[in-house]
Length: 557
Image 1 (cartoon, rainbow, N blue to C red):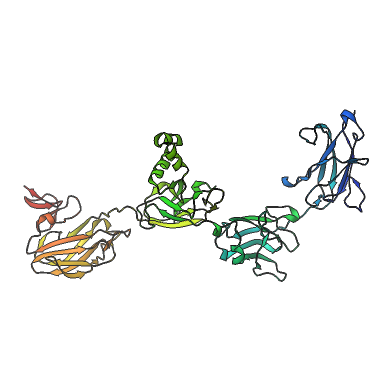
Image 2: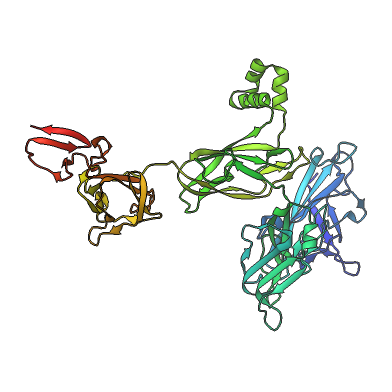
């Protein structure tokens, strides 16, 4: 017997049309459900060499997109008459056949070996191929593109503001009957309530469109994630090319998150407060119902600062339980293993902890944040689930702001005073204080006033005056002559260093006509400074006598 061959394959576009042989034909369209008849050289063969049915498929050899290559997928024909194997063009709609495209038809004959046909089991008698071409001019897309849209994060946060703004590179019209929330098995297509062209031309074309859904309709959409289909045409009637569908069926499909439909999260650092924290490291996240992790990468939750110099991801999420015993065993399972927990705590207690549920999970950062500043924790939508397994909803997005006060590091300053702090004088006029490290950068003033006390009782409150030449030097007017112990109290933050940090409180003490006591003297903070007992700073080779150095009496012989 000669090899299997297709003698002819005819196609009849309509009942009124004459059948056309596909071999070498030029066609503009394949009509769905149109009759086809295949004849082969085996149609009259009987016995072991006979064929029980045929299959055929039609493939576009010049397809621009992989998903449009098959015009007709593999189709089974078992109805054999005197005319041949009679079948239909199988498809969901008519298919255009484009000029310059060659289409291949593959026909295969099978011998059935079981009760029911099965191309994967039955014997292939032979395969033959024929070709035809298309005649329909190919579709021309618009040159205009969708440049951008808002919200850029594809998230609708409120049913009261369900709005989408589309920005095109040229003038277009939105096809309202095809633009809206795509339907599905559980929901019909939902059009937008309003399609507003911004500054349209006389024919209603615009390069910016604002689409919105009224709050009542938006609140009735129960899905968390939806697909919004957008179809736009230019002034020539050509569609703006989208990311779904081809040619005259092209559209832009945009996945949106309806954040208002998710579960609300409550988030607190483990310290229980949001401000003036010593550090940021762990956060307790509580959902309305049983909490679980969603499908988002755990590191998508992260903490960053306002300058984007710090960005620390979350590295672990563990359950928080009210029962201390359950918490202990659950932590042990996480750090060791289930089997080791059984060995240590027993099967029953371990299973209780292993299957326990909670509304709270604890997020831990990759490292603690201790530097002073403001920080934002971002948890993307869908990061958690809330509710029993298979029945829960995903969480809303969360963004929270926290402040870290940082470690209290005292500001250290070096200063000298004239007269020297702790000295005995005949009278006190002006007392100068010189911050020796800041003579160029200068010292500023903050808040409060300087208090002057005599024998422990307040007698005046004054302000210091800055020196015109030495910016680190200030004069404090005291102007006292009566005998007594005088204390000058400079509060913390009265003086500020060049970076604006509070200079700690400073207390100066002087005696008029009486000693203050050397042990109480606060002398020059510069190491090695030497003074006479009357407060005069001296240096070099000193004559024999008693001096003050580093706050202590020294004797020079």
